[in-house]
Length: 345
Image (cartoon, rainbow, N blue to C red; front, top):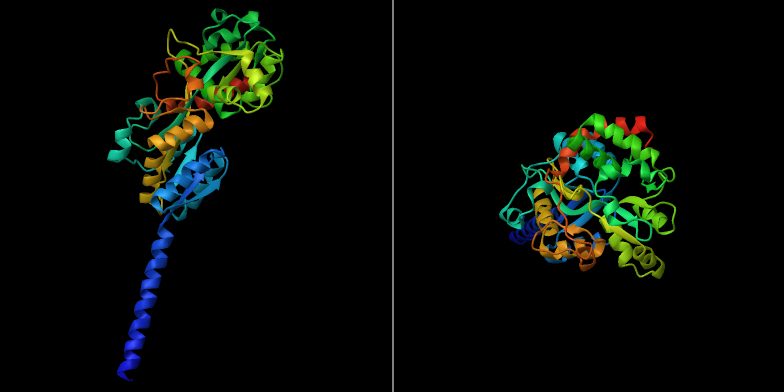
C-alpha cells in the first residue's frame, strides 16, 4: 500500500470520526418534555430557550396520569427528561413513585421560589400558581355575604352554586385541602351541602361557570384566577362584558388562606439529557419566562422578582394557604371517595 493511500485512508477515518462526534453532539442538544400543560403561549417560552442555548425542545403531550404511567412503563429506557404538569398532586405522586430526581443549582436556589410551591428536596419546582376563588354576581351578591369556602354549603345558597366536575384535579385538590383543614367528617358534610346547592349538574370548565354566573344561571362559582384574568383581557367584547358582571372573593383570608394550586416541573430520574433538563428548568424560572407565564396565561409567577399581570393585581392582594401545595395529594383518595358518595360527579 502506498504512502498516499495510507494518508487518504487516515484522513477519511478522521473525517468519519469527526462527523460521528458532531452527530452525537447534535443529538445531545435536545431535551424531551413529557407535558400535560397545554397552553399555546408556552411555545414562545420553549422557543426562547432554544434560541438562547441551541437546545431543541421536544414536547410529548398527554394527560398527567397517562404520562406518569408511561414513565413507569418505560423505566430506565424512558426518553423523558422533564415532566411538566398543572397539578401539585400529580407532581407529588410522580416524586413518590421515584420518577423524579432531586435537582438544584445556584440559579434555581437564587430564584427563591416560596417553600409552599416547591418540593423540599428539589424533586419538583412550581412554575406558576393560580388561586381557587369564589366568583360572584355583582348585582345579586354582596362580598360580605360569603367569605370562606365553607359558606358555599350554607342553605341560603341552594340552587345558586356552579362548579366543574368533581373528578377534575382542581376540584379534587380543593376538597383535599378541606380535609387537611377540617378533617374528613366535616369535609363530607361540606361536600354534601355544596352538592345540594348546585344550580345545575357540573358541566364544562371554569370559564363556563363564570359565564353562567354572568347570565344568571347561578350566583356563585368556583374558578381559578387565570380564567377570570383571561376574560378581563380578552380581545372579544362579549368576554369583557362577562368580566364586568362578576366579582372575585379570595376565601378564608381570616384563617388558613386561599387554596392555591400550581403548574410545575421535575427532572426525570432516568433523564438521558439531565443537564439540558436542568437548564430548561432554570430557564422556566427566569424573569423572562416568568413574565410570559404572567402575561401569556394570566398566572401568578412563582419568581418573587416578577409581578403578576396588572389586571390580576387589580383583583386584590390575598393570603395564600401556608401549607405546601403538594401536601394535599395525601388526601386525594379520601377526597375522591367523599365526593363520589355525595354525588359531586
